[in-house]
Length: 397
Image 1 (tube, helix red, strand yellow):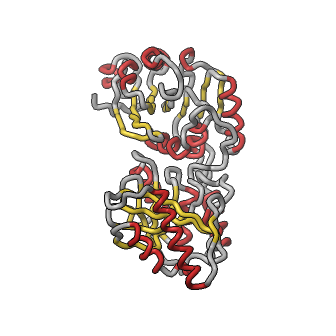
Image 2 (image 1 turned 60 degrees about the vertical axis):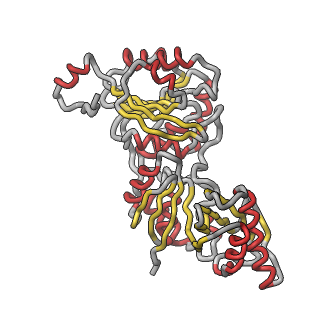
Image 3 (image 1 turned 45 degrees about the horizontal axis):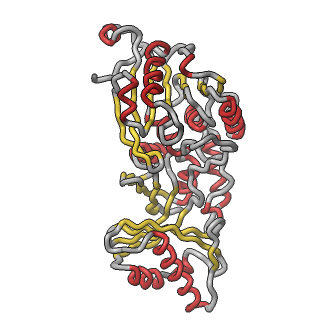
């Protein structure tokens, strides 16, 4: 019988609560939210399920040892005392990633990774007179060393490559949005496939693909070629495929529209390639349309999600560009809910609409805001008086 153990799912700043909700919905136990991570408990099968199904996790770590640490030499000594044969074979290749957040350590993360590597190699060399080899690209076992103040956690990385590498993206435009961030933004809008969805500046289609997978309950990483745990000595292939089969049976067919626009033909071509690669062609439509010349053509509730070009990415007149976004929304998209993420906080003023929600996010190293605008047919006062139940007004402004 499988026993539960502690795991840690890492994520991006601003997506911690979204990830915690995902974990609870999957059936995780003892879920606790941290900064850029969520800890939880589950068994081996749940570890497999978390890797396949979680949309906002970057990697799933399994802690194997924790201890207080005072400096680099102390780290080396304590790592060298661990029985590494319980988690790897001397003939296995391995790699180490390290994250250091401690004033006690003057060395950078790369040096800490090297020091950790030396401890493992020296352990095997002294005990078995043989040493394991390093393989940064395709190791048999990957370790993660995390030092926070005077506390070190060493974990097995069950994911391998970052889980944002879904396996469907064939083509990209300049500065494509990370898949984990795209999924997190879609989930933050409240979108679940029960209404229409538009990405008006869709680029290579990442947001559209993540939205379609959410709408149809397609596991986020079903297209990935491999996970790190598949190389572990205790890997249970039958259990893995059984869990995958259960997840696949939950896939549904959403009947609402998911549409993407872009004014660049090259973007439309790339988006179509990626959507086809993700096997979602039947659920997503992309159109060569300039958003500024468009109008809302679909009926019923519609969520619009922008990842507009930032000043850091493209040379644009931000003030004019954001004003045109606001004008197009006001005149062409009544009764829609529009969200967008931007690092150009100053330019938001020129949208000319009042936000009903503002969330702090990160896009790579950029500090961003994720904002919501509620569009109304006619005045807001008239909207509040209207009581036909078709839409809800949850703005507090």
